[in-house]
Image (tube, rainbow, N blue to C red; front, side, top):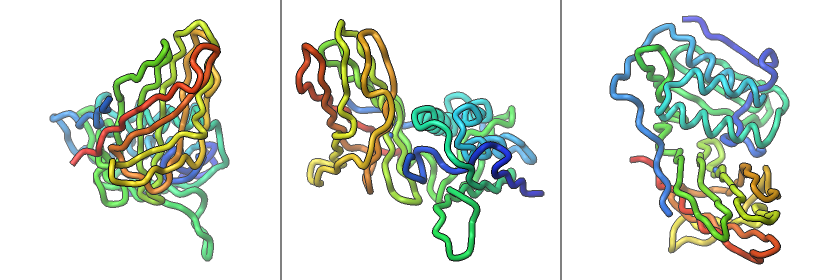
Length: 261
């Protein structure tokens, strides 16, 4: 088996909304891989998938979607990464070394005496067509760090919905992608930078480390926002406020799903 190393050739490398800062009503945990999983040797899907993850390019990252099986945990993770990279835009090249059994993705080329954030992905599983369905990250199942597709929270015809959330194993940072839909007749601004997160009722509130995306929406518009919280578990509550001509200080309470067992 020959390892494939990709760096600047793909236009960038590192984990968007996952392992490096910009880098996201009960939500559902990510869907399970199809029951007809098979280990496919010499599949290029994993190589393509992690090279795309490392690309830090919005267009290249979409290859993760076509390299993974629809409805699988790997595809849910791809959706999260594609959304996060679209929000953040392109970034500098990084580093990935991948073959059909494991991948290492870093924020830059590993150098002696240099602190570079890296993550290791292993235990690949594929569907019968050779598309990636699941893997471990940092020795843990991917589903334990990911949740997707929460039900909407609607106030004054403005919807805020948990699209996806991922907890990085490298930094334990929680990255949350929110869908925002403004069906009111007024412009709306979401104060995502001031969002807070409570992992559990008996734990302290965590303030957002940063927020990116479409926080100001015209009437009838929609967009996505990425919010980052330090050292936070899945399963908590995001509180985020907003303002419009008719909705002053309105607060949206968005429940994130707990991780899969």
